[in-house]
Amino acid sequence: MGVQLKRKGISMNKTSLLLAFGLLLGACATTAKYDSELNSLIGKSKEALIQQMGSPSAVKMLPNGDEVIAYTKANDVYVPSEFYLYNQGALSNEGDLYAPFLDNYDFSPYGGAFGYTVEYVCQTAFYLQGGRVVGWKWRGNDCASY
Image 1 (tube, one colour):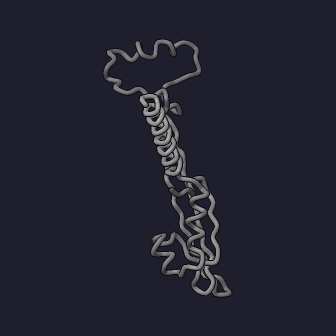
Image 2: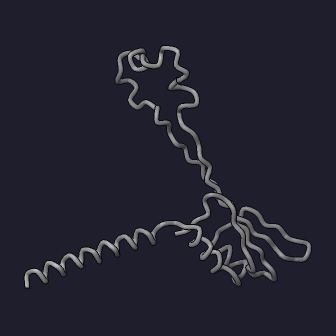
C-alpha cells in the first residue's frame, strides 16, 4: 500500500512538471501566434481593425478605392558591454585597474567597448477592400504574439 502511494506521488509530480512546462512553452511569443492573431482579423471592418490594433502609422488609398493600413512598432534596446565597469569610484587609482592593458595591447575599455544598440522592428500592413480586411503582411524581427 505504501509503495502504491509513493508511485502515485511520483506520477503526480511528473504530471505537474509536464503541465508547468507546457504552460511555460505556451506562454512564449511566436510568429505563428502573431499570424493567427492577424488571421483572426480577416473579414473585420476597418473600424474593428483600428479598435483592436490602435491608430495606424500610415494609411494609403489606392486608385481603385482599396486601402492599405500600416502599423510600425520599433524598439531600440541597449546591450551594455561586458567590459563596462560598475562602481568605478571603488578603486583608488585607475592605473591599477588598467595595468594589464597599458602595454602594446590594441584594447581600450573606452570607445566602442561600452555596448551596442539592437533595433527591434515590426511592420504590419492590412489590405482592405470595401472597408473590410482581406489580407495582411508583416516584416521585421519583432513580429510575435503571446
